[in-house]
Length: 238
Figure 1 (cartoon, rainbow, N blue to C red):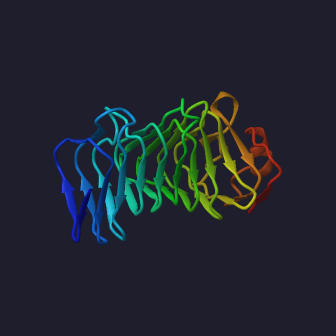
Figure 2 (cartoon, rainbow, N blue to C red; figure 1 turned 135 degrees about the vertical axis):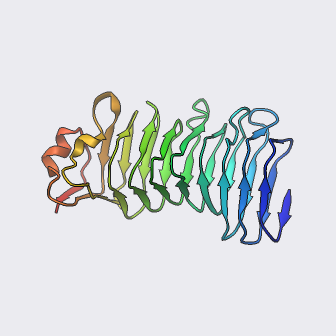
Figure 3 (cartoon, rainbow, N blue to C red; figure 1 turned 45 degrees about the vertical axis):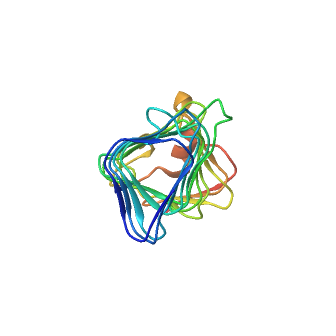
């Protein structure tokens, strides 16, 4: 384990030979390289940076998967993360501009959970996932692409989620809005639900919460149902 009062920066390739925790006192940690386990699923990484931010400019577990990953502060990701077990992002995730991030948990391990306190996708960021992804806090998507596999579910559990689509979310299975959650669709001028592929082999929308459309250019309830939405939640077209 490594514990410092100030920032940490890593520039050479890293291989974990044991369970490792990186800790700072509210300072940033920068991993500008690849980081792998020595044996697949044999070593885990925990990052405790307090009010600092973890900046990762390489893959985590890209060559040899980590057993698990826990990040207690904010994380800015550019590339992928692969684990055989859980991934927990307690401080939320921001995808850097032009980043292409794949969150991969082992599908043979009962779709090991990927959870985060918040998720913000902007710029031209791309997020893909092979494990079930749950966002427990604010979900903000202003640009970029989200893709999940045929067995993965994206669940937006935060009380308020916002989508301002300019590209596409391609769902292999489903996006779920629980009964306590809200999803606000704020399209760009003349955007329609065709920007959100919720139908057929692309997946579906299960709405048990409330969906608000802003502004009225969106086609509202009829369009949603045509796009394959299901569930007993309310649809409000503003």
